[in-house]
Length: 432
Image 1 (spheres, one colour):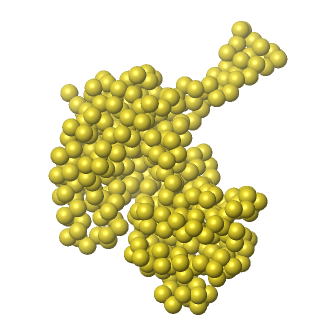
Image 2: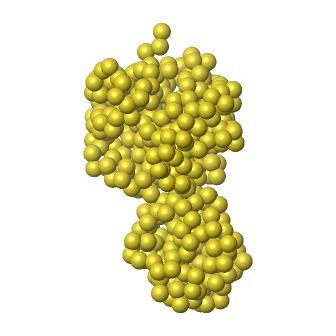
């Protein structure tokens, strides 16, 4: 008989938040032991069966999602957040494909990362192992339920998921598909659990569960990450907002610069890899900045800029200091005219979030200088910031983009959800 706590709306659990969360933690810790020694075949079977369940239950998931979207719309949720929340058959299929791709990757657990033999005959190996129990806190993107659950499963970690209240019904339906996969592979259902209440107090409890939770991954806006970093006693993989920049160097190819700029901003404005600030060298701006403004405005984007940008094109409205630190998540871009790489780098490092930044140039030395000096997790040359995505990196999916500098950085896939231990083998040696 399953001991999974059923998902319930806010206020309905009959037990206290502390009791409920302690039970989730203990269930996860027990499941983590089982997952840590599960075979690759078992884990992969669970992923494939979960993908099949997503397809089979697509209509149910979309029905649950329609309720979430209707409630969020009535509540006045911003359009970019509605876009993140919405699911259709194509997005559900993408989730299923993502799980199948995760299944195809080599098992990240049990790899020998290093091996050395000491003069005394001891053989010392460094072996990859799961982190244990991972708490994932995210906002209005229900697909994270599948991505995070799948990646934790592949890497042998138990997961405690806390999606946003706006996606509660959608995430519940997706979670049930993941449980179908676990059951089919004869793995504990408690390997992937969701907090069964939207009460924010449950998040506060999760952040302090040092006895059962090994790491917290926050995936959301600045206020969420700030709260997690402020309150957490459990180690945190930081996923800051995507204050991404595209820098058009003086020696950029104009047509390439125009195409990349529009894609980086407008392909999908609600993702964390969308460019929010365009930096452009003064000489390039004088030549074709108005063409870029035309491209952006025709695509439906509002352009804000500094005084130089406004002087070059009357369609540009005034940007202020707040614009340089704003993740718009919508069709708005800020523009700053710079004089050379150093000014561009200084702007990125001062105002950016350490997420993703790009340079467009035909000059390889200039590209190398930008790449060396920008302090971000992902730096690109001659391509769109929208490629800041675990799937595009060949990871199958991601649990988030880590902007911190410890352990995992950039797209966090299954491999990044492991740590290591040392295994020492001897033949009877004793230390003198």
